[in-house]
Every structure is written in C-alpha cells, then in structure tokens.
Length: 225
Image (cartoon, rainbow, N blue to C red; front, side, top):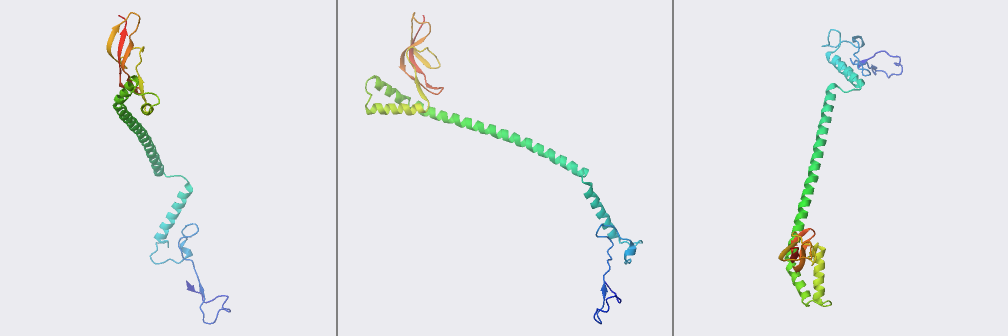
C-alpha cells in the first residue's frame, strides 16, 4: 500500500488527510494460476534472475498440475490397480461368506436332527417303561376286572389314548404272517392247512413307537411241515 499525493478527488479530500492507493503485487494470478511477468510488480529482494520468486513458480506449477489432473477425468494406473485389488478382495470375501453360511446351515441341521433323535429316544424310554402297566390293563380286561362303564375302564382308556398320542401302537393278532422283526416265537407247531408261517397264539402283544419296536409280540406259530 502506497500514498498517492496527487488525485483528481483532492478537492473533496479534507485538508491534511493523505490519499492512498492499492497495488496488487501477487506473483501468481489468482484467476488462472499463472505466473505474472516481473514487470507487473517490482522485483523483491531474494528473487531469481528473472524477477520470479521460486516459491511462487513452484506454486504455479502445482496449480497447473492439479488443474490438468482434474480435467483428465480418469483414474491413474495406480488407482486402477487398487480398484482391481479391492474387487478381488470383495469377491474372495463373498465366496468365504457363502461357505460359512452353508456350513452354518449344515451344522444347524445336524444339531436339529440330533436333538430330534434324542427326543424320540427319551419318549421311547418312557413308553417302554409303561408297557408293564399296559400288560396289566390287558390282563384285567381278559379276566373281566375292567368292565366298560367303570372308573377303572375310563382310566385305562384315557391312559392308552395319551400314550397313543406319542406314537405308541399295539400289534400282534392271530392270523398275522410271522415276521421275526416284529414277532418273537415262543412255540411252533406244524400244520398241513397253511402255506406260510402264521401267528396262532398271542401270549403278549407287541408295542412300537412309530417305526421303533419297543417290544416284539410274543407268540406261538404254526407253519407247513
């Protein structure tokens, strides 16, 4: 900032008040980043031989480089390589996530299957322990101790219904074809009027829970000689 002693507005300026004017001495044009010629401003102490401050020249060079990079609109080769590496990493992590999810689903299925097997085994154990009670109930019916309409008959029927709701069924009837998977033959007789071995006498009925045999039917059989 310098004092300008002469001005067309001196008549309006109060007497004794100095007149000032401003001169832009910046070496770099703020509009386009170019370096101004040395004639635009007097050379300062410490400037180069051409009157341009080395710092101003470097600033202008950086400005032009940044402008050129912004106008290019493309990524540098190094950036493209980083993008490719990140995409590869994303693909790798996605595949790993799929494998982990599949392993989780398989593990959950195995756990659920094992829990179901354990549950059925526990129920089968309870039902097997009550077979003796059911034998007594059946014997009571055969001997007339449990008559329809009596409280004991109602209790026995309700017990059988509850156990049946858990999959317990009775099997073993006279005339059934003998099956060693379901029948236990305690006696056998030869007969000429049959072509296959069949059940001729049921000593104790068999019980099973779904497809699990809790006790085979104890029977007498007859078959061809």
